[in-house]
Length: 421
Image 1 (cartoon, rainbow, N blue to C red):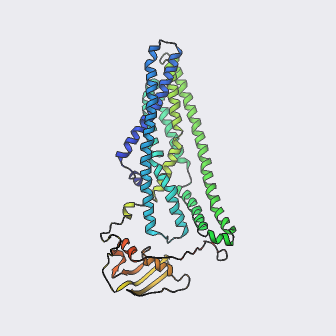
Image 2 (tube, rainbow, N blue to C red):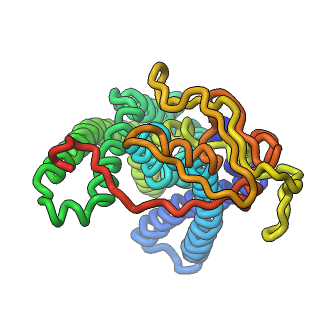
Image 3 (spheres, helix red, strand yellow):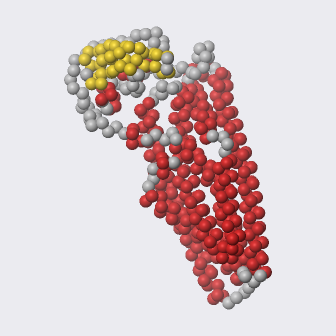
């Protein structure tokens, strides 16, 4: 939750909240004033007695349009600024660890976080926190005004709001992590098939298509289960809305028959309550968006930690390293992808300035792994790498990238069997 709240400041969020409250308030006021005007006009009073109602309707109509436009403008500007920061944070994190040691599955998770996860984080304020706060505030105000007419029965209104929130919170028994895992598995299979598209065109895409269909079907089935559960709970909540509206309307009619309320006031309250309960129908989706944002925030990287602030960083074209005869040196380096599965062990060598060096070995011996260590993509599990006498750990990434470049061979290995490849 702290990560979500750090995405924007109070100075940016409060004006959006104020404009959203005004848009919702003027919308309810427009319906109430329209109901008063129509009901009053039905009694055929002198025209001048309706002047205030006519003016109020016009003012509320213009005000709702202005505030709604202001809400859209301010909230979308805030949302897209947040989206920019989030995606830059994911790009920074990817730049620090790509290519990924854990293989294609981890790449699928990165792609999910960059696309769906970033969108969920972007929508937290606009489609979760903002509408829930606005509806809660207007509900409290309406309950206070309704209590003057119905007394303690007015508390049924906030109780319904809490019941709706509770249904939405308890509704999703499937963890958002499972949703992320299904989407990541599908994206990994898609990346794998896309990377070897040329080979599949030549050799046949049957096995790859079957492998791609399985995670796609799991993703579709999971999303369908969630959607069906949400639809059932939303239908139940809508029935509760209709029941409460009928109960409150019956109580208001009783006040009219007891001469405690006029027929005009009855029309006003009926339309206002109907409009407010229509806003309640958005609460389940707002809560689901809240939960998706909380789940996505767990994987949001801290962008500040990813910024290169090393004092030794210099402008392109100027080497930050001292002149040295030994250009590159490895001292007892070791590396493994998984515990107990060592790729490099106690490897030592040095390369002098002006020397040409070839790294030769069988497939799987660790040539590509060593190249990535030398490029600074990964850090060795043990030992030390030195560039012109300075350990990699003491150098900024920009210095390593200036000194060493790679031109990789464009080969594709699908995550299938040897026969399929």
